Amino acid sequence: MINMFEVNETNKMIEQENLDVRTITLGISLLDCVDSDLTEVNRKVYEKITTLAKDLVKTGEDISGEYGIPIVNKRISVTPIALVGGSACKTPEDFVTLAKTLDKAAKEVGVNFIGGYSALVSKGMTKADELLIRSIPQALAQTERVCSSVNLGSTKTGINMDAVKLMGEIVLATAEATKENDSLGCAKLVVFCNAPDDNPFMAGAFHGVTEADAIINVGVSGPGVVKYALSKVRGENFEILCETIKKTAFKITRVGQLVAQEASKRLGVPFGIVDLSLAPTPAIGDSVAEILEEIGLERVGAPGTTAALAMLNDQVKKGGVMASSYVGGLSGAFIPVSEDQGMIDAVNLGALTLEKLEAMTCVCSVGLDMIAIPGDTKATTISGVIADEMAIGMVNQKTTAVRVIPVIGKGIGETVEFGGLLGYAPVMPVNTFGCDAFVNRGGRIPAPIHSFKN
Image 1 (cartoon, rainbow, N blue to C red):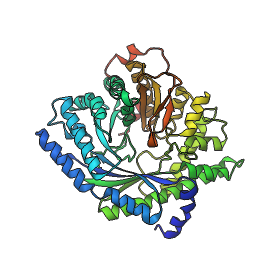
Image 2 (image 1 turned 135 degrees about the horizontal axis):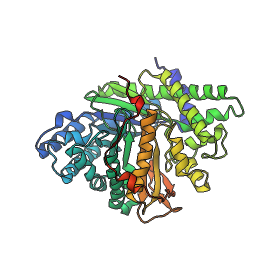
Image 3 (image 1 turned 120 degrees about the vertical axis):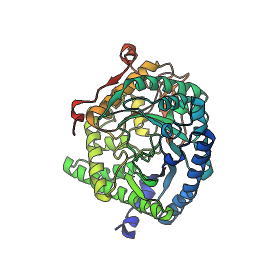
């Protein structure tokens, strides 16, 4: 049982070390909104979201006020819209109407973001999947709170290279469609390999078809707490270091478990999972990079960075799973460049490159995240970067993702401001040697041999 002693124990973490619950995410199934009439689909979607989520924001604020725990975001995830709109939508523009409906519903209930403008195409694309994907630039340009994700591969099915090629073009088109806002649309678009059905974090959240009609998932965060704990054991051996991370992750996850249980009870919606990811913000002292530097690196990106991140990720998971029976989502350490001041500093100093970040994604929770690249980067180059990251996820049986932002009109070394939790980022160089012939082959990369486990 979670008791008030544990809550009181976290006060110092909250007040001095940037501990927060990053998000309460209400997952909503829209499968019962499917209809052959587009007007009806839009009506059903709006009504279901605004009915089920009407008390979400107030509940989050009440829990935050009563327990003194900051809850930064309240969010909604929905069934992948390619499935919901497949019967009614005959053009990309038809899907855009659904994006606008999601945005309208999100504004009505007051949530920060709504995720699930998504397609799952790891083995092939239906006509509806392709229409939704082609609608993404327009949808993200014409909405404020909608987030989009596309799952391009999995360990079980391989990588859909036709979809990888298409997504390179879509990322660039989204950047162009939102160039007046420094290509901000790309910050709300992510591609996955092995996407989880219960991830509460944006931009990749969607409500999987295996989930209940509605579910509460909570994402916790606490890089500052971990860094503070590690500052107390400087110079100690790895055994003490690992024990410290595990114990700290346990306490952080207990806070998330408390919030999840309270939100579930008050909303009358089943509790799904706690995602115990260390998610940084641009705030000073709330950085995963600074944890790695506290472990012993002069700067993140130095030799030893991948090993330090692997250890951190594993100990966070080990501590977290002891604190909650239902840990899920992504759960580990995020390394988004624009959202982590330590990462930004390392890039500016030349310590951290795109290639080193790719190596780090082999052992972190997500992948290449919130990375600004030159606006004149070719679509095939973006597809090549995506393919590399999908391969890491597929072969290592883990979730990987790419959220890169080709900032139209900006080049290497310039800075782009996204604002809020999205922060700011220096534009990073990308290898300019071409991969056009590789990307243009078409078809699928087969699943690896270890996918055959039946």
